[in-house]
Image 1: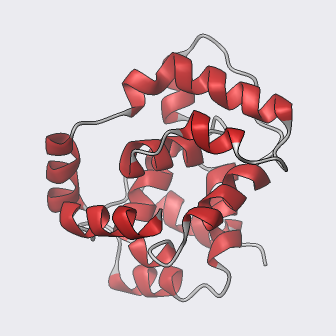
Image 2: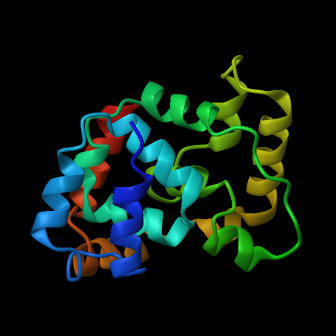
Amino acid sequence: MEYTELINTIHKADFNINKHNLSAIDIDKICAVPDKFDFMKSLFENFDSRFCEGLLLTCPCLWTNFTLKDWEKIIVSISPRVKLNDNITFHINNNSGYADVIFIRRYFNIDIENLIEKLPQMLSDDKKKIRDFISFYDEKICKNKNEITEDLNDFYNISFEELSDYVAHMK
């Protein structure tokens, strides 16, 4: 199923999604999508990382039932990865093909390089691009506990404690 139209509608309404500007009706529509994997794959492939982050943290119903294997499938399914350039703002804030990596690294604190090495079905070129991305941008991606706690409590529909509990049980 194609979810780009639903996501586009939300994206056009407000670029910076959070619990204060996404209606309960939109949240219900998003949470009701039958194939959350395809929805998230479409989101990560077609939208910038800030929008993806805002939507996923405002609607944790999309992913709180995901296992680490589900996240691995998403990482593998987004292929081929785009080649990096020297513009850090482009890759962090735009549809750069790495929004999934940014989200997983930032909020789950997973060692992406170690994770992808354990994925034999992933293309070697994609692994190399992700390793290059992480080695170049990891410092910009990561946030400390206080930054994450403040962001989650002020803007999103998942608390730091809920996120931590999810991560502890996801692995």
